[in-house]
Length: 541
Image (cartoon, rainbow, N blue to C red; front, top):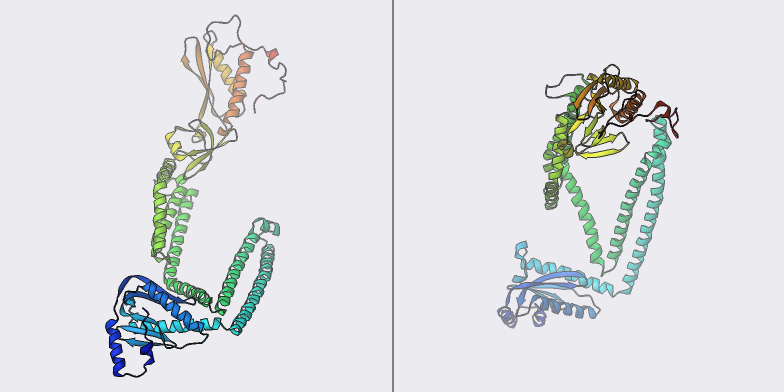
């Protein structure tokens, strides 16, 4: 509210007329709370917040009237002293003998515990500062001095930035040279290996990040100081300085308050690392056969079990650490935790299926790294048993990745598990009833003897698998020296079988025939190396 209190301000002594005037103002002063607020701002500085409706005038109208009065005061080109006068239920803020602001009880924010007198005193103090700065802005000499100071600050900031740039290059080069010299003298590695490790690049990036932080601090400080030199921008500069100081103080206080929690976190981490190391040593000894583990723990499952227990130990440690993490009780931290939990929940169905399948593979001991296996239609050597998938290296040089859930769902044949006892591989031919079965047995065994890669200590043998309508199915069983050479060995064996059967005139009836041919379907020996084949060629890999 703007109360025209010029007459009241002109009367410096209490007289019956003044007392009657004061009572008339007090009786006529009608103020009530308003649902709106308006801030009186003069020369870029907030003076006071108006919340009441006075004599039918809302906060916005009262603020506009106050701004007009302050503009009139400054237009005279004179500095004015601000004072306050307290009435019953109101307080007047006056300057140059004119009432600039009138505050009432509904204007006071009672929730903050502020009184009417305190609100008036604060408004007067801020108004005095705004009027002084407005008067300063109309003084050319002061503006020229402020511009000179701002220019000096800019030059100082540029010099500091130049010094940081020079120091950054020098420190970066010095750190790289020091690292190369230290590593070379220690004999750990040579300078070329150190450069290949990208340690120098990491050091350069670290110094670059530090330099960027210094550039930002210099720029921020220079801008804040320059803004404080001019009356209109001084509030912005003061807010920037206050923000920097408050942030530094808050960070420092936050670090100080977090020290007990950080110490607790360090103790938990230290104990967890100690327990994990003990677990690792124990399971390593079981894996190496140095000690005997429980009956349920096999050497091939020692390392997976160690990883599970290690993960469980660290998860338990994280649960213990969580309350002591700085900021863990803030709403932002809790919101991020909820978001992470939601993502894990939505995406964990397939993930958990693969993880549980890995546990089944591991503890059923169905596969081991290095085993030659057949999973479904994929045949090769197991190269990796992961938490989510199994990698197979085929004999054709392919790397096949099979999800663990698919491995569990497929039939798995391991050709390497019982190699020492003679895992048998089979191949079959069908021969007509007119061929002596003893001759066929001998030919197949001779082919196995001639084929490299078939174990000699495990004697091959032949059995008649079935008696079909037109032929007999003979199966040769033998043991391979190397399962990963299965394809090559079978190729060589099949070639030897064809050569021997051709040599002795025994016709292979596979897959079947409709009638006896006029002559046996065999290849004479003189045509075994028909062009473009040569006798010295090797037909198998």
